[in-house]
Picture (cartoon, rainbow, N blue to C red):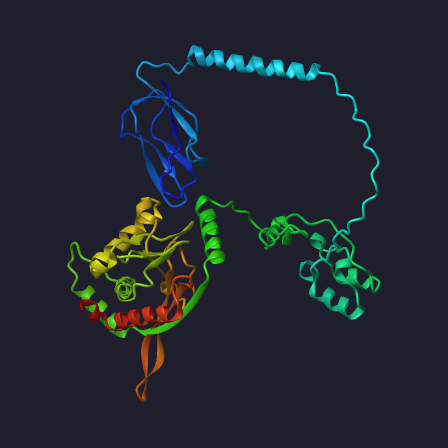
Length: 446
């Protein structure tokens, strides 16, 4: 019996994928566990294993095909000795269906046209319904040069009443000077991608297509890949549905830098480590989450999930997007283990070799842009997390210590919180705990 091989769901959120490469060809004999193909999702490239044994009949989807839906047939698997030819019953059924369809078409063509229906009896005239009056176009959506706007204001000319003679219908100075004062706006056809009255979805009108504002020769169009689509979809949803608020605190990291230098200097040559500031940040966050477990949580429509372990996602910048591999049970791991694990995850993330279990889920996240010299910023919460810590660069600043002014290395961090889960005072307590660990790394041993 012929079995269909379906596009697998390689992660809980996967809806479609790219069949990057076939590792078998038609006629090959395979058994359970053999690698059939490489499937590329929005986050990683993974191998797809055979579940049953048999012989590959036909490859239905060619290499490089994008947007293959989960559970769509991608190949056929034949039993031992089975031919690719359809059986007689299937063939007869196909012929029967075709004959039935043809007969239906003939009957439809031969059927006489029905007699026209008699005109409806006259009814009393109904009271006319008042049609809604279309509002004048939004002035912000009138494309005009700044000079044209100024002259129009001086002359009392409505820009919405004018037709622009500039590039892509832009209103310029000459259009305003030639217009008569007091001209009323006239209805104009909507531009491609421009929202019209009543076109709002969920109360929010779609944004105009950015290509409307530029000449085709002035830009290069780069199609969205699967990762960029996923990032746009998830983060738009996150910013729309999660009520963000932000808390910022400064941390002195002179002790941290000195500790890091001492530990790196004593690291063994083989099987050693090289600690980064971010490794200390991961460990400090893990311990702070244990002290303030209300932050180590996730929102659901029926309850708040309070997590028992600090599974911390570390944002990794890729050439084609962003991914957040996870350090699981970070509270139980030492700095050297965290350091080596982060490097391994980042390396495999850049080659799209991560497994879904290594980047999906987690209870908290860190986004560090300090290596790029960014002083401070805010990050978007990545569900199912309730918070994310944005870490800026450590820089030398003048600080007040007691009654003295002195130089210190200061790092600014900003906590983005989901207000459905975390209140302001709770987020502040987390930052206080984090600050204590990051400013005195020896406290991590307590």
